[in-house]
Image (cartoon, rainbow, N blue to C red; front, side):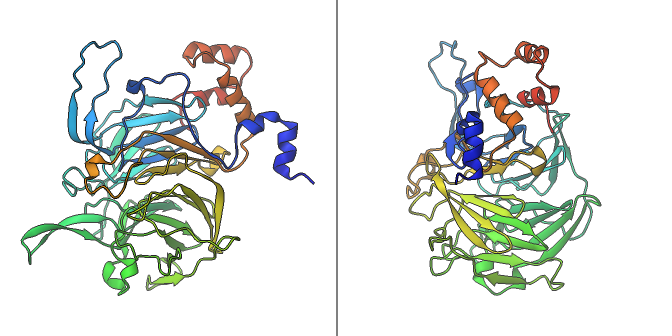
Length: 431
């Protein structure tokens, strides 16, 4: 008997064009000019409201400033060690980029920031300038999607985190939880600056705007809970789950099995970590140990993809179900093995379930000169479920259009396309 997906595909051939479960490169046919898309980068952050996919910040060792095709000057202007201070939006329906013009004081130390969607705001924390550790950001920035404006959250509390970068961040019940990250400190033994990686857990109540500290690195003697950097963090039923490794190859994986460390900030008043074994996928495999991968959560499902182990860059995609800790390997692969990228998944309120992945490193990770490692501005898309028929139909309409302009949208409105659907074609709209 045909399954539900096969039955729907037979009833609506448009579903076959969605390619549910397959990782593909998302390319716009409306504009391919370099000036109309973000420059290749790593160390950026991203989030999505289900209409647009936003990226901010990032780094490139040699930024060749894009020129207008009509510019006859053959000389490229090159900026070394560029820390980007720009917001871009990728419209999900039209698959087009637009640089967002913003107002207000924006963050300037943007490498390895964290960014999450909270209502109609993006909340950003951390980040560093270049050289790494320069002026690390300790403020929480708010980016309002409707007004395209920046502001700084005025917070209280004596237990607030220092400026850092590479931390993991998750939002639940209007509370932000932060774990790990890196900052530079003075080493009195060597009289030199060195990187300090920690596993401190902070909580910011976004309602009262109050910081608190839930656990410090000294709360545990296990090396598997120290030195966490650019890892994943998920929340489920009162537990925080650490997903992935730090700069230490052995943490938090043992015996080549992927482990999770569970933090219980509400159930355990002492705020202690516990280590729980995960279950392999039905074929008996675990994700290979890795770091600098991406990690996103949708309800009780956590998705990881890419990353590296200092020798190989991965292209696989996995799902971890909570609280069963059951792994499933998705039958797809990233079009290009990628690490130091970012990913975001559409919110539940958008009624679509789709993961977007942007940027990162795609060349030999063993090259000791990180400046020679190639960065990309690829956008990968993975539909994780069949979207509503209205969204499928809208994508089909867009595929038939010569362009997407205000005039085109006005014509579609006259033809009876609902305004709610047309709003999905605009970069300046938010959910």
